[in-house]
Image (cartoon, rainbow, N blue to C red):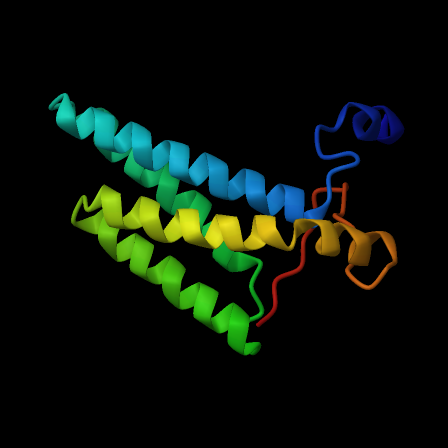
Length: 133
């Protein structure tokens, strides 16, 4: 049963950086959907998409070891994005997230190689994850 699950797992073969880029992409899509809903005057949909974006942002944040200066600065930028969502400043939120995503995309080949070499651990496919405290 467990092997069957792993074979059908959409994460199989996905690197950590690919997962991170997908999280950024989905977060930006949720923010765009919130912006469209706001422009259409659909407050219920706007709130739903804002909430989705915030959950994704907190998911990204959960993977950061903020003892590292770079990770700490990423956390600060993610916090800024959350504050922009709170006031429906979707343009500023998208701009910061886009810059962060592009920065990770620029190093994605190196990150995949580090993971392949075992320097960065592979994604766990058993549903468990580590959070640094």
